Amino acid sequence: MLDYSMLYPKETVSRRVVSMDGMWKFHLDGQEIGEKEGWIHGLPGTDMIPVPASFQDFYTDKDTREFTGDMWYEKDMFVPGEWEGKQILVRFAAATHRATVYVNGVEITSHEGGFTPFCADVTEVVRYNAHNKVVVKVNNELTETNIPCGKTITLPNGKKMNKPYFDFFNYSGLQRSVHLVALPKESVFDLDLDYEINGSDAKVNYSVKTTGDKPVKVELFDEAGNKVAESVGKTGILSVADAHLWRVHNAYLYRLVIRIMDEDKIVDEYEQEIGIRTVEIKGTSILLNGEPVYLKGFGKHEDSDIVGRGFNIGVMKRDFELMKWIGANSFRTAHYPYSEEIYQMADREGFLVIDEVAAVGMFESLMNFMEASTGKVTAFFEKETTPILLKAHKKAIEEMIARDKNHPCVIAWSLLNEPESTNEAATPYFEEVFKYAHELDVQKRPRTFALIMNSLPNTCKCYHLSDFISLNRYYGWYVKGGYEICAAEELFRKEMDEWKALNLNKPFIFTEYGADTLGLEHKLPSVMWSQEYQDEYLNMTNEVFDSYDFIKGEQIWNFADFQTTEGIMRVNGNKKGVFTRQRQPKDTAYLLKKRWEGLDLNYKG
Picture 1 (tube, rainbow, N blue to C red):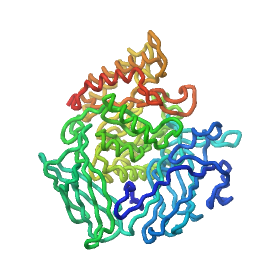
Picture 2: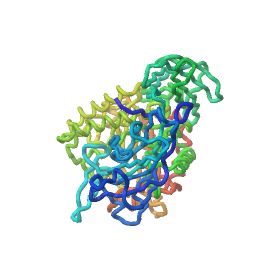
Picture 3: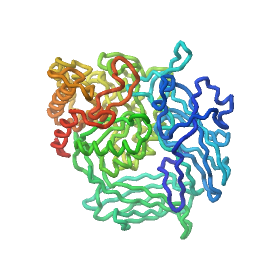
Picture 4: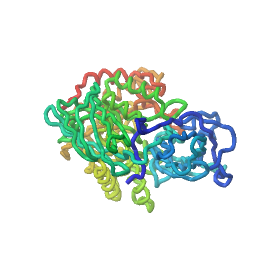
């Protein structure tokens, strides 16, 4: 299990948290000379860069935007003398895709996986009442042994270049917040929660892990601040009378307070907002608190102008307001776990989240969005390096579930996006991944993976492992687009009839569907890329959705236009957004708003 806590950093009577966000010194290391020249003690040059942010879009030269390799960050941090005797951590919410951390010239830790937090325990190396130098070496090269998958090539000029097997830009760097944290030596390390609902009452089953043996006290407060339940012990049950349940767009959040006690003295205190709710799949229904829900919403990206994939609190607020305006109730964190603050917002706003690990690009293709419908085979899970990839994949799942398991908004885990599941070699790999996720999650949330166009009822070897089936389908765009849309609908219905004939007795949702559209392009009669065609495409797709009772959700690709690698199939990025990259509506937004506001939460329930 993890050797560092995934709990979000919070200040309490026993804990201290200082933000290290701001301007950091920055230096690219294309020649890989940083260690040899002693950069662990401080970087050359004077360039500064904001953290959190992707590094690529600040600069005006192409070599920097496309840079592949090592990049170095540096910042001084002051550690107060009164923290002596505590455990001192530097917590990185993410470093994409791998990082090594040095403090005062001493290597502290390394981490691989670009979308989950890790901690550098600097207790033994910091100087108190003094400034300490933090240096981080980040590397953004893509490989087939870490997720997301791709490869790194060397160009004739000697420069490296990333070749992603996925259709979004490989933004990287210190893209999320960094915090300096002081904890008591004995502290709350982890928390597991599960819920039971009995009539109007509820039970909160809890399990707390600490770093010591002192007794634990747990209290639960309602939104008015009244204590509604308490218990003593590292495991126990909080019985809540007349419980307020966490519901879609009606999110009630209790405050859970955990204290490690030494008689009357508080050794450590940690608190977390929780929502009482249950999630299960029964037949073809997705049930929240025992009641059917129909998912309406988006595949998204953490992507915006200038800061790239860097966490942007203002963009987050705008995104949630737009999702509320349009009548959405859900989204998938395509194609990686998002910033923790987004889940906190979803908890508060009552959005349902399918939480996806960064297992994307598991189909060897630089244009898998085109080749996925051709029947291409790449034997992705038959490589000599597959066991190394599986190990990295499982670690990423472990970190995602450890971080996100207590968010009421998280109703399912997506364990892969568009993998090559048509080859028998995929089955043992998938079995391992699905089993591991089930073992890690106390709540036993449903698990799924998003099926690529190649993965059809008669070709996919792994769909039986999913608790609900998630389809990425582009009939009318990559398949039979334009005037052939009538043929696209026939093919679409043919596939859905084949799924229906299998009588799987599981819910189906569409985790991707959509058509690229330029925000100012109008054409009558329509052509592909025009606003008019996006509407025609959606009207056809929606008719198919409404024709099958077992389809229980629609998450269009994509919420907003986003950056990709450059190429002849992409006009400065993917333009399938319902909103522009600047978060303004295309015509289709109004079509979707009318549809989604007209669909009850228990549509087809």
